[in-house]
Image 1: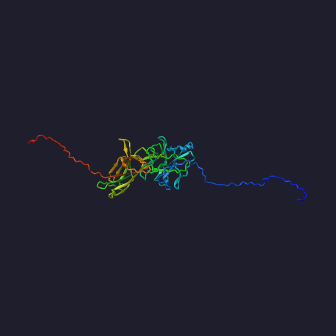
Image 2: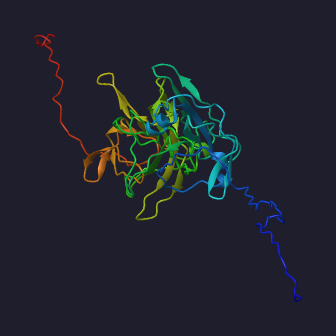
Image 3: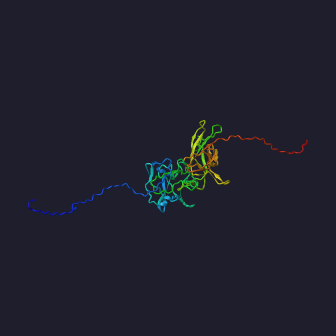
Length: 405
């Protein structure tokens, strides 16, 4: 500043405007997922699981079938079990394939949460090729309608007999407990108030364990004799090949039957009984002391049935007839009077105790093999009486005789 001068300064004051701003919207950070799969699966189940599992090599032994049931709403379908398994099974089985340790179907799906299925497995355990040919039919009498397939008796090989099997999912039971079979309700139970077989199954990821049972009976007979003078010859090499060995026949049985798809109940079909059926010959063994001559394991597959029926005097029974090469016949007229031991693993013993560990074997049941051992010997002549009969007499009067006559 200079001397002698006045200075006046004018100042304008203002707020600084926000006038240099940029705005940029950054790109979203992204997360991509492709493994979230929606489904309609809510139900979970625990089924009975036991037995040796069939693997890929066993594909020809069984088919899978289903009967669809529809609930009015999901809640009812989940909380109200459906046991209406009598009918409605598809005639065409599922296309199935084996995957590591289980089977899967390639053409079955749960379409919604209102659809439930009764699953069944049917086939024959002795099948080795192709598809087990089982035809599902419907019986309309008596009510209600019931789906079934037929079975028949015969030699274990080379006949119309098959080792038929039937299976279903069963409810889980305690370890060591056995399942029951009833001639009224099949493999479901014996009372009808509770159920062994599982209800219709809704959409689930639970493994569906199917337990399969043989639904025929198999009968085996061992024929032996004794060592000593009263032994019987069971083989004669001097005869033609088909007549050399002792023959065994089953008498008076019903040859055909049916199996219900719902419960696996097996029943023989009423009709003409087979008068006699020749069992497949067993294996002969010569006498080798202390073991007598014998033929073991005559065999036959048969429809399960009672061994006697009716009441006297019109009653009848299933029997056996053994014919030795010399033409002699030995007949067991009534097999229902026989007793035997019973060994059970998965089913409750259905027989009544006779004494000790022996039971009255009054019927042939499905899933049972029966072995009868019969010993033949000559009947000793040991019951003789000797009586001297009085003379028959003739008395004649020839008149008076004198010297002249």
